[in-house]
Amino acid sequence: MKIGVMGARGSFSEKAAEDHIQANQLSDATIIPLVSAESVLNAVETEEIDRGIFPIENSNGGIVIEAVHAMAKHRFVVEMMFEMDVHHMLLVQPGTTSAQVDTICSHDQAIKQCRMYLKRLWPAAQIEPYADTAKAAEDLSTGVLPGTTAVIAPRRCAEMYGLEILEESIQDLKFNFTTFVVATKER
Image (cartoon, rainbow, N blue to C red; front, side):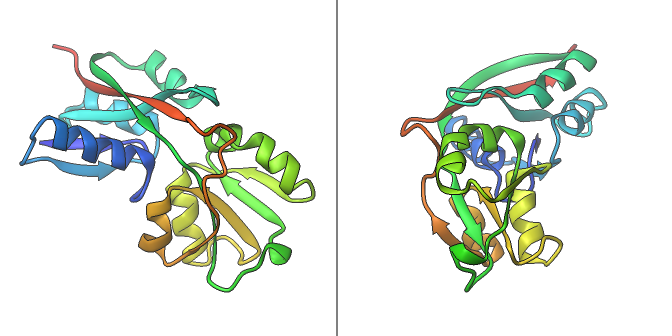
């Protein structure tokens, strides 16, 4: 079974897919990172994947607009929905200090979930939306993003991409739940 997710390796959607696989005892499942909701639903429709998993709403950041736009373009069945507690980390290249950071990148939804933190502690930083939280982490680690950039991403991205956690659990609300959709092809 192939499960496509909205996000790169290390994303919250990848973790949601791992949780879905474990909860449903899907021992033969493979996770395929597809970065965008559009790519996930296109792959569901063309049967390149058996299931697609993507976020639809967050308790703090609201509706995931990208997912809504993709859902409007595709025909699929919502097999199930489930929630996952989400904690954002501020990640930097090793050795980078707060004083060196001038830009913070992440998916628009992660930025929304951390907006008061950013406003309070990073008023001078340039805040830039990025395609995906984990993709931002990967691109910071490979030098695509400059070393003066920090990214908002899952904890697992720090180890996966050799980054340091500058600050932990920076989301505005202690309880920060994201609802994920499991989509299958309409028959």
